[in-house]
Length: 589
Ligand SMILES: [Zn+2]
Image (cartoon, rainbow, N blue to C red; front, top):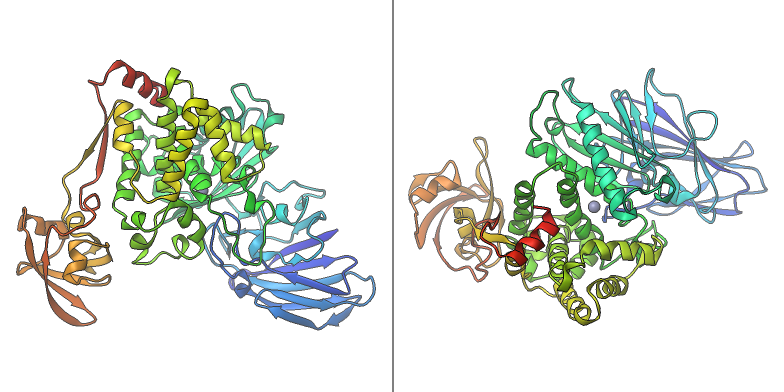
């Protein structure tokens, strides 16, 4: 059996030591470390943290030949086991790589386990070596015997089961008869673990019922056990989905506190993250792009479908909170409005379609810079709005029987929870909408996904008894600017939006805004008082030590939507009976 042992080599140097034993190696045995981790579409070159690689066979040291940045060749003689040993530097708190210090350890297999070429389909064994006293292990990887010896059916499974190490908080609950474990590292003493478990359980039960119907049996679920691993830090937010677990990172202050009467906005954001990653257990880990049917760990794996796998998951993450009774309709509509505002404030939505943005994720979305808002659109947020538009269109059909829920379940059943293409999504929409409306709705969906026009959400929401309004624009919105403000840095421009007044005036990312109309500026919105509806303003700006005077004139935005204020959604109490019925079916409100 291919077997790995991972040890703490030097805790203060943040070094893991990995010992890999390959029985019956090939005469020319190749080994490589992945360049990316599935679920996070960026080439991260994990091999840059690998060092001190040595190889032995039958007690004899072999010379390894490095073939490229992440691949090595061992020339073996005879049948004796090949034993490799190497160090991996691990000091990244994110969910994507590995971490080790005196307080905590964590790793994804893609960061630490060399792949043995040609042997990927064999069972892989993992032994967790000696750990600091009273450290525990949490992972969804099935245990072998003895304890701390784990088993994965193949290499894909080995690297799809992250492992958390340390002294963490630990709780559990059962959902549809399946054990769910929750571990939290770094929580403050006032953390309300029981509240977190109760809320997570409601999310899991709602999503299990979504995919498998009410009363689902444990044998229908795609996993036998599930583990949430949450790392609480001073500042951070994110998650990565795996087949039977998820690694999450969140701000400590966003965890529920004992005695807190209401769910804070930060906690609702964390619940949305939990909901999102758990939903991925079905949508992207099993139901997945046809291109991901077999993963290539050596390079980018392209797909045009992230709008579906990330966008539709983003639509359901907050909707599940509503359905689980964790937030009310008004709060849910505020979350939808924030998503809609973000998309409309992004000029890149006119530059790339969702399909293009998905394909380009590797060099655009995951390589964000000051020009990202002008260059592309998030397939998470606009993808979620496409899901909303599709759901409302389906629900607005004759009889009110169709919904996006039906489309998702049909896809799950038709594919057997496996790889799908765009054609499968289209076919499921047609089947759910019925023969008469199906073709037109499918064509509309393809235009939303492959075009750059804004979605018809104001009209669709009106038909669902929800009012779409715009807030008065802030100065930053009127000018087409994004800024960061603090007493230390002053007012710093972080992005200049395409086609806006700021761009025409010659402002650039990195500029510090010193004064407007001759008045020292501390906060950008303070200047709004001097410019109630000004059409021109004189700006004093600092760039690369020089002070510049720029003249700004508004309005000049070619993209009028981007220069407007944020979207507000509210239940329309005066809506007619049909709209009220649609709204009730959608929001149960
Ligand atoms: Zn996701």
